[in-house]
Length: 472
Ligand SMILES: Cc1cc2nc3c(=O)[nH]c(=O)nc-3n(C[C@H](O)[C@H](O)[C@H](O)COP(=O)(O)OP(=O)(O)OC[C@H]3O[C@@H](n4cnc5c(N)ncnc54)[C@H](O)[C@@H]3O)c2cc1C
Image 1 (cartoon, rainbow, N blue to C red):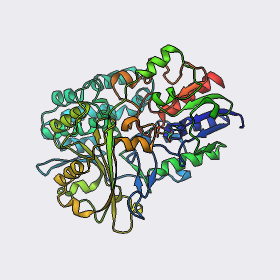
Image 2 (image 1 turned 90 degrees about the vertical axis):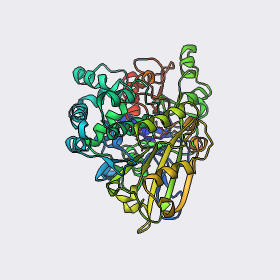
Image 3 (image 1 turned 135 degrees about the vertical axis):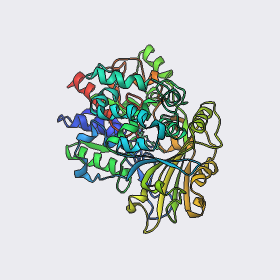
Image 4 (image 1 turned 45 degrees about the vertical axis):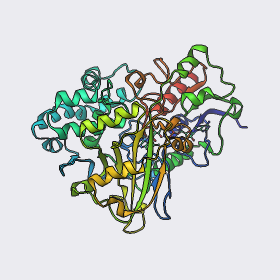
């Protein structure tokens, strides 16, 4: 085997980000990927019928387009084209209304009646100071460069989503909208800091929109792969690393995998304390996912739903909170909170002419094998009567199958670990630079490090910066 400066194990968005950040410095970097295709959670395939392109994992990418690192890369030169739906998000309600996340904070606020002023006061500062907040928030325990802005954001973000919604808003629609945004974090909505994700996703919606790649999420992977190789990087697929002996000689190894997998790599002799910390790492709950091939667009009762790609289906704050709470009690909600994306409303390249795709998931207990198809489709029918008649074919994955598709999704947890306040800045171990392990040339660069789940590449970028400082 050749010698390399650095080897990255795993080719998810964080693996590529780490590899690119090092290759940009003129090092020789190798990526070893277990599967036959690179991309981890960011891949696409014809899961249902010929001619239909579905995203196996991630599909909506505000965190990618807004990433302080990925946005500096010339990925457009390697085929990445962002599609911007008219509105970021629609949240339909049983009374026939649908609340939209629009680019303008003021126009979004206008939908919230008595809460209009409160919504503007909450969101506008986050939107205005996003460029200052993002680098501090999307990384390890910060030594903030913009302490005032971060403190103002932190005071709001530290609250539970339920607390924030009830204290700040009076209208059911506003509370539901906040709950739908917050539920992305996959925690009970009374958890400390569960409002942070609502502020981040809301602010990104206002600031840049919630785009997705034309032709499928795979375009993100392809463009990162193309750019990495153009810099001289090398990628080998079908190379599952099970032992240190599987890795060529190099100065630094960066693992784009989670603690449980890292503990199983033979020949890695971590200190007892570090090993214990990894053993106590807390994983989150799982997901049940469906992809549909559709004969026509989803017939939402409220036509405004056709102006957004992403839908939050779950009704009121109380219903969404119940759904998330039940999952943490190891139960399967009858009326789950469903995240649905209708890509072909804005990207006709993903289906044969006149046909459509849709993607959805709901949260379930980790390792669940329960089929949630009926529960999810009932939630869609609730806001789009006649939806079932449009289904040509479907593909489903329960939580265990989600882990089979990608070994990083332990028990179906797509965030590489629970996004609790205790694990937000110091995952997977309590260190100032949690990318370092107790072995001096071994790093962890997956979403099990700050800032956690999502396609933003920031975990990989931060890990690479530290490895570069330590060894090169
Ligand atoms: C259904 C679903 C929907 C999602 N939706 C979104 C979304 O809309 N927007 C968003 O931003 N994020 C979304 N995510 C989350 C996002 O995909 C992940 O947070 C992201 O992929 C994490 O990137 P990563 O590089 O840390 O790890 P991964 O993408 O998980 O990549 C890890 C890679 O390591 C490889 N690997 C594992 N073990 C080994 C080994 N021993 N040897 C070699 N290689 C190995 C795996 O095969 C994989 O390719 C979604 C995920 C899923 C599954």
